[in-house]
Amino acid sequence: MKVVILCGGQGTRIRDANENLPKPMLPIGGKPIVWHIMKSYARHGFKDFVLCLGYKGWVIKEFFLNYRAMMADLRVTLGPQGAVEVLGHNHDEDWSITLAETGEHTMTGGRVAAVRRYVEPDDLFMLTYGDGVSDVDITKLVAFHRAHGRVATVTAVHPPGRFGEMRVDGGRVTEFAEKPNTTQGFINGGFFVMDAKRIWDYLPSAPGTVLELDPMRRLAAEGELVAFEHDGFWQPMDTLREYTLLNDLWSQGRAPWNTWTPTR
Image (cartoon, rainbow, N blue to C red; front, side, top):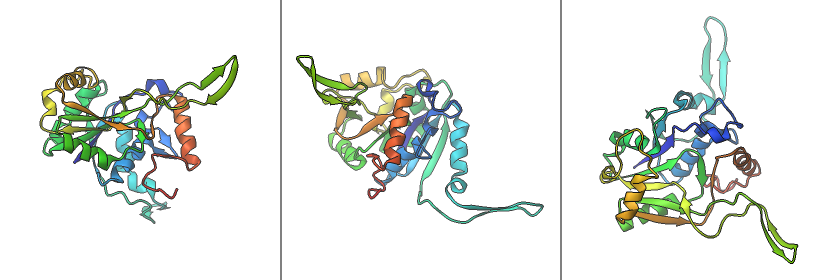
């Protein structure tokens, strides 16, 4: 089963972090956020990826083309007979990665439709955004989708709090929580599972198709969209503050999405 990751956006709201990188390449602990997302899927045995490239897609291609060299120790010999020797294999990724050019200005639905030929041979494919991490149980998500048999499943998450929450009694603050997660209501958290045969009835191939508008609305109206409720950790990286938060969690060894090294 393929895992499709939307990696084409510009990330205009987080330009303060780095203006030279596409958003999926912004690092958490020295590794691009898309790498963290891929590790989360691989932890559950899903290692066949399709990355939908757009804005500065070549930067993402360069990372994976040079992956072995980036992850290992090297010995470089200069001079006329110069050579590069890879000294160690400091990674265990046995991934297959399709780097698909889907257009710099293509919308989310158009990007998915552009990689139809790569995912259609299977019965299902997974889909998520290249700028958010979670500890969602991918194995349970897929089992949930297979059990209900509808066209699509979306992971429903609680929006992370963006403002400190206070309880006030008679002018006195009785409780203060720094940006707690909202406990009521759900939003689209990505981490979709889709029927690789039937989804195209809802997803036009036009580059301007926005997945979250007409396709999702039609699926919902026809009873073909089901929510997998996730009450655990989920965090997008839309702002500099969120970029800093994710890096702080990683550096402190408190990254909930790091399910592949639970002893960290």
